[in-house]
Amino acid sequence: MSTITEGFLDHKIFNIVSQAAEKLGVRAFVIGGYVRDCFLGRPCKDIDIVAEGSGIELAQAVGEAVKSNVSVFRNFGTAMLKYHGMEVEFVGARKESYRRDSRKPIVEDGTLEDDQLRRDFTINAMALSLQKEDFGALVDPFGGIRDLAAGIIRTPLDPDTTYSDDPLRMIRAIRFATKLTDGERVFRVVPESLESIRRNRERMSILSKERITEELNKILVCRKPSIGFRLLDETGLLEYILPQLTKLKGVETVEGKGHKENFSHTLEVVDNVAAYETEMIAGGKLFNYDYEDGAEVQRPRTEPYLWLRWAALLHDIAKPATKRYSPQTGWTFHGHEVVGARMIPKLFQQMKLPLNEKMKYVQKLVNLHLRPIALVTEEVTDSAVRRLLFDAGNDIDDLMLLCNADITSKNMKKVERLRQNFELVRQKLADVEAKDAIRNFKNPITGEHIMQVYGIPPCREIGIIKEYVKNAILDGVIENRMDEAERLMKEKAAELGFTEKIQ
Ligand code: CTP
Image 1 (cartoon, rainbow, N blue to C red):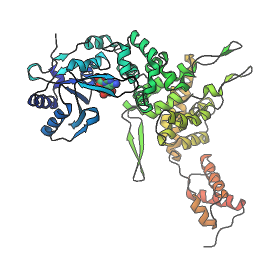
Image 2: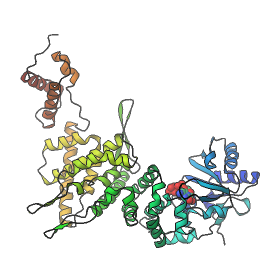
Image 3: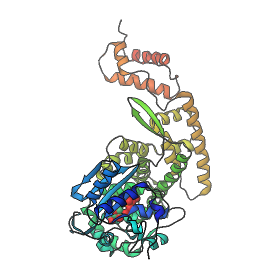
């Protein structure tokens, strides 16, 4: 028995597609994520249309009707157009089989049911009819609705077949379990599917790193990324994708003393970052910074910042490499923040992540992640706060968020005390910034200025003078003013034996 769900098809585009399909004499259906998200009450801007016939011809007919450009991808037999903020993708129903050594399928035309059978999960294989006679009828041959209600992720075919067709689906299963689980519902991958993933994990080798990383990024921006990372670990996929992370697992014990379990700790920090970031975004307290025409532009953050999540995931990545035990001090991980920051470029290269300012941001956060907490446990001097503001710049709020998320002791009293002190540091940062504007600090003394005043070519001493002035400002010896900076520059230059050029 089918259910009529016309309400899901209120958008004008569905009637237009329906009429175009009727004219062409083909049956058309909405399928996949849009249908799933409608039932879950989640917003969805991507619509997938499957036609029993040519998807490209249907797209072109719809494009003509709405006067919109159609992008055609002949190699894939798909076409796409944009309409009133929606992205609509068209494909012909296919009966596909895949070669074992490649993702490129052998494609034959098929019926709707053939097409549904070759999709990844039952919850993604539901279709809504666009035929006039049963507009909105649900076509759900594999019990997608039942699985959606029960929070179950299962493949329409034997999982070995579905995963072998496209091994990326192994990570997708885990991604959907992470993404669809929220405060009200829990989604689980069925045990036989998890076993199949474990068995087929080697098949990941035919996938491009870019596709794997894209899925990982989607897991990272979920509400509770730890769900995904635990599943990736349990199925053996993590060992394949990011082996450095699995090295954080386990507790070593010497003389009865064990250290923190760094894998669980890392996942807790990622979840904390996700929760705090969501809260701060809702309160309008976080910003993204860009440069346009040489000027800095600040915009309120409206969605999770992927790179903050990566910084959280990698903040302790060098703990295994720096782990030491001594009977006097117990376990230490000295310098793990510096070693970790140095590991980032190679990790980013390995994951095919961008080697640009995003990578530098992650490096910076990993490098500085202990600094705010050091201020919490030691005495907070203005000069230490100025230095932190100078080193973090506009990323100070993200750094403070990460550092707060990093407080994960089981001793609740200790957590409470650290969090209170943490608030004091936050306040102090705000006070010092309001007074001294260090966040966007620029040394008032430039290299060019020194060269001009003393008539000298570029040399090492210029760096020494600039550093001297910068430190004096950050340490509060002088105010951040040109006249005071100039006085100090002259003092240091004289000490180094320079005399002013007669103008
Ligand atoms: N699909 C599939 N196998 C894949 C990728 C996609 O069977 N490896 C099918 C599924 O039916 C899926 C649809 O194509 O629902 C659209 O894929 P995609 O846009 O990647 O996912 P959505 O389900 O739309 O979900 P999301 O937008 O959250 O990625």
